[in-house]
Length: 392
Image (cartoon, rainbow, N blue to C red; front, side, top):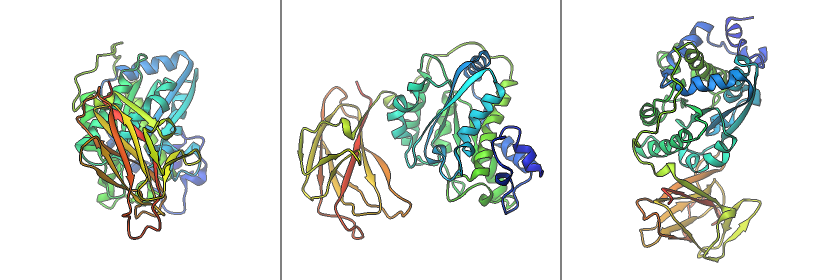
C-alpha cells in the first residue's frame, strides 16, 4: 500500500485502492498533508462547532448540509461516495458513532449564491441541518455583488433557532482563480470557520511541485482524488476545533450587515408559481418547468414585490432567442437565451432592478425579440422564475 493510500484510508474507507492509485503518479502523503495544513484560513468562532460536536456526541439524528454549485453537487466524481460532502458526512459518522448522520446535498450546478440565497430555506434549512458547508467561490463573480448575496445566505443560516454551525469552503479553478477575497470578507465579519482548497494547493502548483491534473478533472471540477483532499481540508479544521479549548455555550446575536440585509429576506417564485397578469404567446410547460415562447412579439407580464428583483431563465447553445425584460418604467434589459458554451445548459440568474420600494407591487414585462444571436437557429426562450430580495 503506497503512502497516499495509507493517508486517505482512515477517513475514506469507502474508497477503493484503484481510486487512490491512478495511472499517473499521485502526490505523496507529506505533500497532501502540506496542502491540508495551508488550507486553514480561519478557525472563526468555535462556539457553534462545539455545540454541534456536543449534539453529535449525545447521539440521535444529526444532519450534515451542503449548498453550492456543481462541485458540491458532485460533478466529475465517479460515485456519490467519492464526493467531498459524502466524505465529510462519513467523518462525522466515524467521529461520533452514536449519531445517526444523514447528508442533505443542496448543490445545483452552474448556480451562484444569488440563487442559493433564494432557495436555501426550501432546499436546505427545512431539513434543520446541524453542520453546514457553503461552497460558491468558483461560481460567483468576483465582485461586491457576490458578497451581498453570500451574506444574505449566511445570515439566513445563522438566524436558525437551533444555531447550526456553518463554514465556508473555497475551491479553485485551474487558473487559481476564485471569489475568495469577497467571500472571506463575509466570513470574517461573522467569525466563520473558513477553509481554502485553493490556498492549500496553488502555491505548490505555481512552483511546479504539484500538477492541477492530479486534483481537477477539468477546468474547475475535482476528480475523486481532489474531492478526497477537499474533504480532508474540511475535516482538518473540524479536528482542530475538537482539540480547541472549550467554547462558551452561547449564540451571539447577528451583527449589523457588512453589505446589506436584502438577501436575508428573500422570496422565490418558480415558474409553476407565477401567475401572469397577461400572457400572449407564452405557455407553461410542466416538462420544462418553465414558461416558454418561440414566437417573436410574445409578451408575458408579472407582478412582484421586493427591493431587488431577480430573473431566472434557461441558457444553452441551441435554438434560443433574446427577450427584453422591463421593470415598471425603468430601462429594459436584454437577456440572451443562447451562449457559446458546449457543456450544456444552465439556470441564469440576473438582477433586473435594485433599490425599489419593497411594499409596492412592481410590473415585469417580458417580450420575445426578433433579434437573436447569429449562430442561433431559433427564438426559443424559457423563464424559470423570479426572485425577490428585501421582501416586506
